[in-house]
Image (cartoon, rainbow, N blue to C red):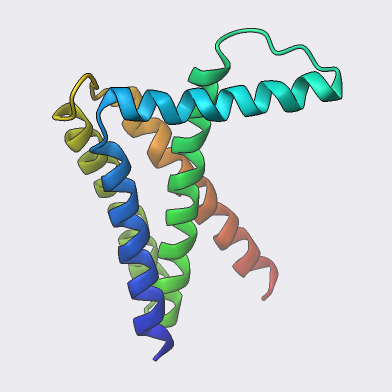
Length: 142
């Protein structure tokens, strides 16, 4: 039963990633602007100066964190299936990379948005980071 639950969570989150990529630039930009404005207010209250393009940084951080979360879900889902580590590693890394490529492909067809290889690398680095953390944690438990 837990296998199915983790598989459903993974599929739902992956669909959420694809849905956010299909948003037009106007909607995506509006959401990013709102998040940046909120963060600027928090930084102002904390007395921290926010230099640079905070909205751009938030967008990149959101990509990294979304794929890190998906990587965690991939690791957890495949650990439920009790496959050999080598096979699990291959599935997690392949599906993380595939999701990043498909995400950028979808984004290329969204109004006002573009796709870039750099974003695929950024997305996959989120998956790779969590996969590595999961493996280190697993190795430390032995």
